[in-house]
View 1: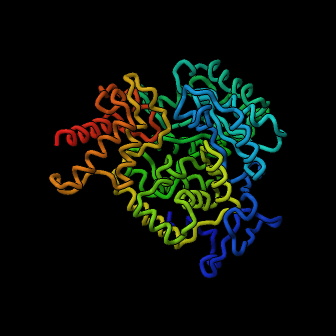
View 2: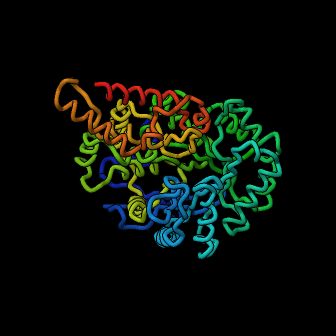
View 3: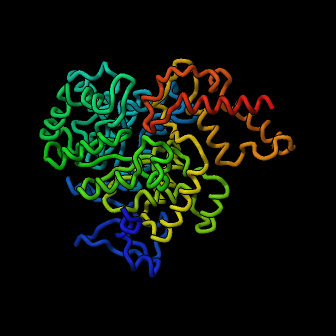
Length: 466
């Protein structure tokens, strides 16, 4: 799809006069022009789901990184207790400021996310929010019809509701060591009849919208859309990974990924609303290298790097929700400000971000989003921490470079090695990977994890021997 077509709804008036368009529709269905919009000085932008008429906040609260007692998130510290008081306070603030879409899963926060989300939301009128959760039947022990049904029923119980507003088949397109993507999809959803059962639950109004989240083999994505075209199954929405890097470069980052431009185009031309995950690429687009951040600050000195990414993800037609997994109140407030109201990306800004994306993919980082699906490692490695330290060293310009005999190189080498030991305890470092590959099949980014760990370990060993 042509990039100009991607942002066509901004219109020539916006380009010529610097007037931006609000994402909200008036009673006549037209998009009103909002002049001199300032971030955070208006109401939360809402989008209408054409399948249900739901007025949904463009900012969706991802409940996968809930705060825990003592600080941090349930994803980073899976053995810690969820800080329910903080969850309640953040949910209250979100609802008060127009956020009404809350996305969770039985798999998030070591199985505790739905419970915490249910406690926080049940304190408010049920018609003031939309719940999205997933059929996360990843383990073979949950592939039977009865086990998958039990997951859905337990979600209702934990979320303290009699219906799910947005139910997703979780992470379609993956594969295992024993099953390819189609075999795995059939085992999880078709052979057991569970997809047909979910359709029945939708007819019974226990599910209001049925969709899927996609990672992995595009063949499965295409298959589900073909079923939609044929009338076999109707998808009310679909969740995809989209950001200004993945738009053109997802396959370049990892050949098994699919460019977001293709995914968006296929959904949009069918009128299937899109829900966006990873708008800041696991935090990497919020922590840009200094030389890239400088370019952004020259254009908008007061805008954090993450705001560019969130504005980008919310701009295209047909995008219903942009998800953000928010642990801290400061992140929640910042994201609410970004979308109250949304300032759509202009064509000129779009060209700027495409240039930034080109520079970003040249950094040779590992495309890890710290989702933790690869964990726990049976040999104790902290895989996300290893990749995170390596990536940050690259993006911050802290990798040793230049003449190896030079004092600057030796100082950078020492800083890298000391920082590595501080960030990742010795017994959890890449050197302890035996290549069992139990992690890779669970990676939504399709990273060849053992290969990348070996590459990092070889680099570290080279630094140690200098």
